Amino acid sequence: MRISLYLASANLEVHLGNPGLKDDRYSYSYILAAWLNFSVGDAVIEILSDHWDLPYEYKDRPTPSGEMNAFAFRDYLFERGPEKWAEWAKDKSRSEIQMDFLHWGLAKEEQRGFVNDQQRKEIVNAYKAAMSNIKNGTGGTQ
Image 1 (cartoon, rainbow, N blue to C red):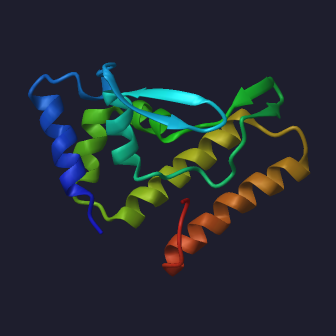
Image 2: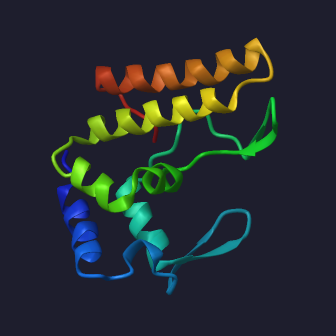
């Protein structure tokens, strides 16, 4: 499945000067242990991410340099640059984009480091399993 419709919409917003991803007007609410309100920019990112999460989810985890928060698609998108990413992704399949997201996430986890071999093994194995699922067509990070 190609997400070119989503990307075309996001790309159009960028080229037209629409605030798009930075649009902080109210868009929708969601309940997850608390009532949360989301902006238009949040909604655009949610559409682009297609509800993808990295396979090893945590609120925060210990690292050699202290507690660190989990990564999200938003971090991946903004590190790549939304306009640059949209141009790159417009001809990619869903699985190609997910694999890029997973490779990015694993590289970020490795940059942060691990407090012990068990933590490294759990995190790396979760990423490898998700990558294998994508390659085999049995799923991904959802």
